[in-house]
Length: 299
Image 1 (cartoon, rainbow, N blue to C red):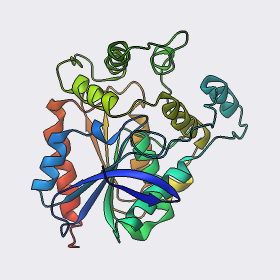
Image 2 (image 1 turned 90 degrees about the vertical axis):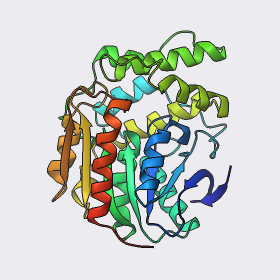
Image 3 (image 1 turned 90 degrees about the horizontal axis):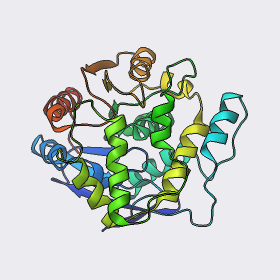
């Protein structure tokens, strides 16, 4: 697995396609390793004429771990943030955005089509604000702006994300719990055991299991609060895609991005939850390629 030093930490990455093609840099969501991206999506983007680069965010997968830095109590942080109290965390979304820019520097990418899903979409908005000259385009999938007036996930969803009590300790039990979580936050009616999700979760677990990193990433999201100032400043051509049945990040988050970014295009995916099931993948890929091609350049 190749690594680079980016923003003074080690970042693990993989790339696919012709190095001479325009780059599409994909940023995964909370606790997700690069292995959580659909193989079909990567293959179709490469076939569409793009060099696809995946990477592990800090504190997950095979990238830098913040070992020794305590994972904050998430529920306490949520309460403090809602009271307007500034939180101290091991790192922030801003730092993760600088990781992304640092990876581009290390790979000598002057510009890229940036794609972020969930937390990755939050990071993508920060990158687009901090380094507007580095983006050909931005695609934000099932993500939000941190606007405190937007609908929040229900108590049931939060319980699925932040489980209290004894945690599973065996490989099979940990994988089962992760699959069960997507059964709660994912697309209604989907069988997460047979649609490829269990396979990706299993592959990720066998590659690296680091639950403390997930909690610290979650802490960075909570601490970010309202970052609409970054969203408003985005100049890159922006595509927003969001499922209408997303219970973790309700669709109002995607609509808020589309409202704040001038010229942004919003695609609402009817019935999709906080996942990308195979039946939605062709439509998502088509919209991404159309968006890339509308601003196509050659490296």
